[in-house]
Length: 280
Image (cartoon, rainbow, N blue to C red; front, side, top):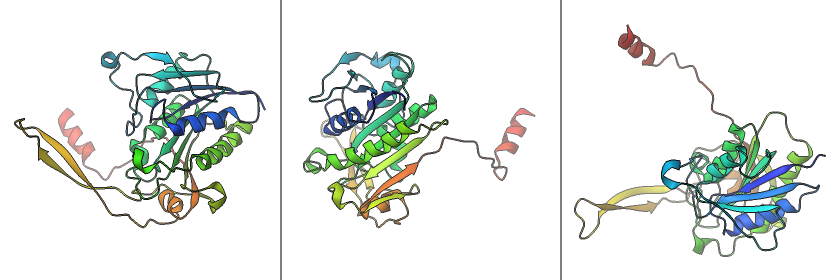
């Protein structure tokens, strides 16, 4: 087993507990691996694989610190997680990386949440650069909406469980890295690891266990034609246990493999005829 360079990132910011737990777990991998942390300086939940308007944000990189974490280097970046990964591919944090690991996200990134998750976006951006990625997320008991968890809901989060499961998954890749890059989406229940039923290879569901129910515009007093968006949370949904969200809700660690975007032939649509008439 050769030594590898592993980048650790997240979308909750350099000061998040989940990132710190994951970084320590990566430093405890078997083997003499180089661990570098590069994470946003603030929360970027829901950023997906966005890089941001670089000419406006003028990204800055600063040295950072994580207690009890012997990582080789720790950086904060004034930009989203995908930007952290892009900078790493361009050499900002040293030689090329072999693997990107993102998390631990409070809130399961299942169903449609994978489209919007900055945690998953970091792993997808890695694969776009021919590097495998692992996204590690954990459900939030009672209130995890669209892959996000609020501070008051995660006070008793069982971070250690997600860190242990994530470490095992990463160790398996480090021990036998695939030739073609993969993205492994790991979702772990919020419970002690000894209470988790086991793990399942799951499909990507359509919706998360709980989603936003509706949104309304509320006028802002004193400001003409200006509104705040008031969102109402939907009811909890019972999901198919074969899906990522359903498995996690039933106490299983869910493992899903995310494919790359690919072309789909749709000759049944009217697009070709419409364009033929335009350019004829």
